[in-house]
Amino acid sequence: DSGVTQTPKHLITATGQRVTLRCSPRSGDLSVYWYQQSLDQGLQFLIQYYNGEERAKGNILERFSAQQFPDLHSELNLSSLELGDSALYFCASSVEQGKIAGNTIYFGEGSWLTVV
Amino acid sequence: EDKVVQSPLSLVVHEGDTVTLNCSYEVTNFRSLLWYKQEKKAPTFLFMLTSSGIEKKSGRLSSILDKKELFSILNITATQTGDSAIYLCAVEYLAGQNFVFGPGTRLSVLP
Image (cartoon, rainbow over all chains, first blue to last red; front, side, top):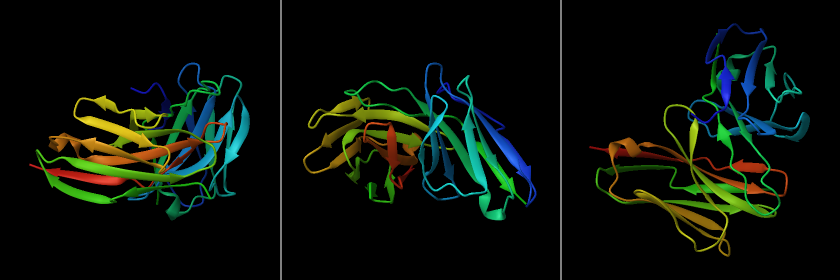
C-alpha cells in the first residue's frame, strides 16, 4: 500500500458525460500528479499540483481540468467524454526532500475509466 | 526535449535466466533516476539512484547509474514468473519534482 488513495476504482460512463476522479496523497506529501495510461501505452503525464497550485502541465486536454484543495486532496475532472478517454488514471504524490536528495513518487491504485 | 528511452521494449525469458534492462535519458538538471515495477495496477517503487557507480540491491534485483553516459541498468538474476511485469524507468529533473517516464520494458518470464 503506497498510501495514495484514489476513488472510484472503476467507473463506466457514456460518451458526452462528465466524471470526477478523486485522490488523497500520502500524509505529508505536497505534490500531486495525474497520469493517464491507455491500454498498452506508457504513462502520460497530465498535470502536477504543489501545495494547492498548478506546477506543471503535460498532455492534458482542454476538456480535462484538475485542482488541489487546501487539505491537499486533488480532483481530476473529465468532461465531454469520448471513447478514447477510456484509460487507467493514476494519481501519484511526492514530498520535496530538499535541493540535494532526489524525490520519490508514489502511485495510487488507479481509477479505471471506461467510456461506452 | 526531456526524454527517457528504455530498451528492450519487450523481453521473453525462461525462469532462471538473468536479464538486463536499459534506461537512457536526456534531461535538464538531472536529480535522480527511479525504477518501478508495474504488474496489474499501480507502479511500485524499486530503486532511486542519484550517484554514479553505486549499486543499489534488493534481493535478486540490482541497479546502477552512470551519470556520465546518462544511463542506468536494472538487473534481475534467477528470474521467476513473479518477475513478469512492466519495468518503468523515470527521471526527476530540474528542481521542481518534475518526472519523466520511459515507455517501459515488458518482461515475461516463462516457467
